[in-house]
Image 1: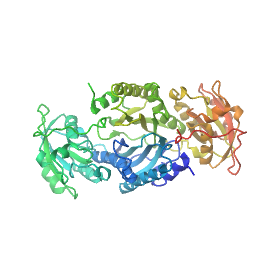
Image 2: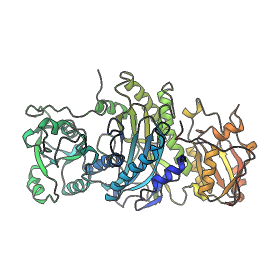
Image 3: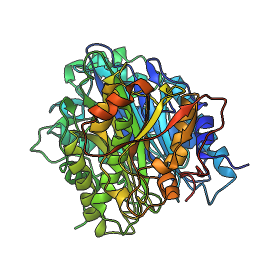
Image 4: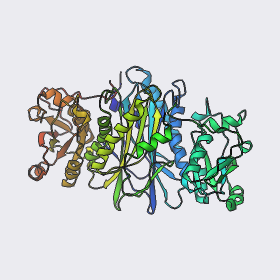
Length: 295
Length: 295
């Protein structure tokens, strides 16, 4: 028997838990939750994954869900913020792919729910809508201490540039199963780095963005780039969808940063920020990155 | 010259203003804003409009933007909440409709921005992504007093049912230009109605939802329904996309409600909530409503 909208929504939302502080979860016109801790500011982010652009229908639905939530968790990581409540909107071709709809969506929600549980994120609400193409939009809300949140714009000329993890070769599989660097980002923010962002579009596009936001130029040491096995420097710079963190730290803090870094994933120095009036130094590496608007 | 993603995002976000309390607006990994007023709880909602489902490409882009934001404002109205910050995600076929992309998006953002200004909502951030079909997802964040927010579930057997405005005939045009009943909803919430929701899927679908959430049944007086000119009772019940408010109020408050109602739009009594063990009384009117999952 074909489920109606309300029945399907109830089955999907039952796959998640609500976060601490939830007053009214899925099922009413809006979601309601308690305010952030005293002294904290609100941190929020939306992002979407779209079939054919960010995933293929042949990819496992649970991994697509993992990616949809993982991408916004990665943005929270980049600020050192704490996520709490997610609102999920899904566009799905209900009419034309009848039968498989419900199963695909449940697997997708299960993939999101598993990652949500790991990082203590709750489902506060969402919507389903008909669409020719599948897409999943996640709005994530949380908090941080205003003075501690790390922006892209805090970098200074002379700062050392580091990246977490390894870069390149995220397709065809790793872009669906990456682990957002949330704990690493929170630690780095507390340590006191000057600027941070996540590498979603590729270092070649995201490093110029961080430098521009910080009113600086940059030097990249391509041979220093931590690369996944079998990846070229060009891949490490331009493949995109790495979801590692790029950060700028004052030179005097570099030794402490390296010594105190408590995580298993590597933290690698890859360059530095330069005065704004200098041209970027990339030693011949083209920084093209990934433009979401090109398919 | 073709704009790249960053350039287009900057032009679009420049069409909006940030709301009071914004700490970090569009341009960083996440948006940051100050917490809700002391003693208030957070209210949040996401919803999307999709080409061919909620609008046509031949509709004016500014009206599509109006509808995208108007729908979530209508959900805020239904709780009596105060909206503050919007995060907007847009899927757009950039590759295949080159040239017109930028203009359509700017008009759409202008339509949203005009409505946002009217209700003092700011743009906190957003994303653009490639997609075969156009869709616009709005995540809206705000606040309310916990004891004052009106849920669907607060109705009691014996409560009188009212609707704001007139119903039916929202297609082909009114669904794109409706005025969300935000002020009315806030007033009703403060007045102290027991339950409220917005009529987005049609009274025939939304009334049973409100009754079910309130663990009641209902009686509808079809001849009492306030109808738009030329609309039949069946249209008033089932067309959907009215974005009027449906509310349940204690019988002893009805006279005060009617006497004190300060708005030009009508407020009409249309039935009552019944004990849960009774069958709904609809005097022969079929309550089918609109299922988002059917196109």
